[in-house]
Image (tube, rainbow over all chains, first blue to last red):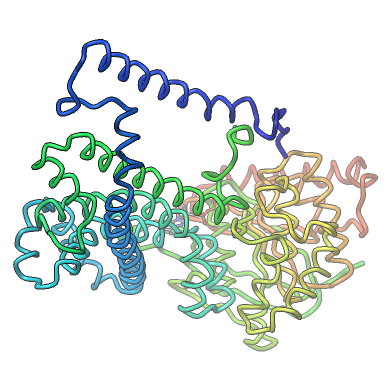
Length: 274
Length: 259
Ligand SMILES: Nc1ncnc2c1ncn2[C@@H]1O[C@H](COP(=O)(O)OP(=O)(O)O)[C@@H](O)[C@H]1O
Ligand SMILES: [Mg+2]
């Protein structure tokens, strides 16, 4: 085993640096921003300062949080479906080379077509607006999971495959006990990429749809605030979008770390890796 | 003590050849009888087809020519443990789960499989490491887990493909001794691939010397020293003489062109 790095108040020096250094930069930039806005007297409809944005975030929390929930729902559901379908299709590919060769090009086409370009079509074709948002978010989230998992399922150690063959393991046993565990880190890496993409997909589709009414997400709030020249509110919604993206990434990273920490290199602590 | 050499054969190879799809002739006209309960070493330079031969006996590679037969019944051909040069453990599974794998693949209930695996881990001196993941084990310990996994089904035949080649000398010597102890107690048959003259003489009752291009067996030499063999044997004049004899046979094999 590697030696343990010394800790201070529960974190290693490295850990504190990782936490505090970006925080310090953030605080400095926000302070500078606020200072310039006040010193130059920039009006809020051009560039609101961080304090005003924070105030707006609190004041408008009602409609903003409702929109956040809408966007979050679409993102989470799209990611869930992308993960399930991506995994299922990758397993199918691993079982049959013919299926892989015939379907993979279409998955690539789905991936390379810009979502902004096809979102209007999907919104026209699909009556239900939430469903069309879901489809758009799913399209962008799907491919990284599919391609990563496919690579993972094919990365099995040849000697381990021989070992399973020696013990006359069934196809199912090989899949369940060997291929899927091998693919796990790849799948989780894909999931982490797709989490951010699903959010972007949902936001882009909302922008294109410009939907009103009850089911309106964060992008709609940004559009609306823009029309009404409520720039601080626009910034507040933007802050929420970014925060959501960061939260999704952190949550998926944590999940990945917890699932892999006992055995996989990628989940080893900094001090442990050498 | 003579175990196996004069005993009946567990498996015999007659005129076996292997040509890979790439055109490489890995083995040509190999005939070999592997005595039940014996310890046979396959010794040769890399590329002479040792792994191919071993994998053929395991049924992982089909011969292109010749026959592999199991005089005592074909059931023995499914009663095999295999140890690779790398430990080849599943990194996501604990030592215990790795060792239990062959039993579970055969449909044994998990609790029973794990009980047997724990007993086998204790036999290779890894008691207390059941819950450890391969990452946390040293190279020698990983190889012990690998050996435990190969032996957990109590196979009649243990095939080992340069299992200790990647280990340091001290660890290798210890594992050599432990392997011999296990073999003496359990009486399985061993085919041990190595490119080390010293290791083959120390371990085996019989050494098949191989040459490359095309791979073939050029000599079979008995090693008469009695078991248990320990550090006394390793430093004896008899050991040195045997090593010299085997080295000469290997040299002759490497000098000889294909007839
Ligand atoms: N799967 C394979 N396909 C094609 N050639 C192979 C394959 N495996 C081994 N060979 C070739 O067969 C010869 C013998 O290989 P191998 O049995 O691995 O020898 P050794 O174990 O003695 O080093 C080598 O020339 C090697 O390149
Ligand atoms: Mg080899």
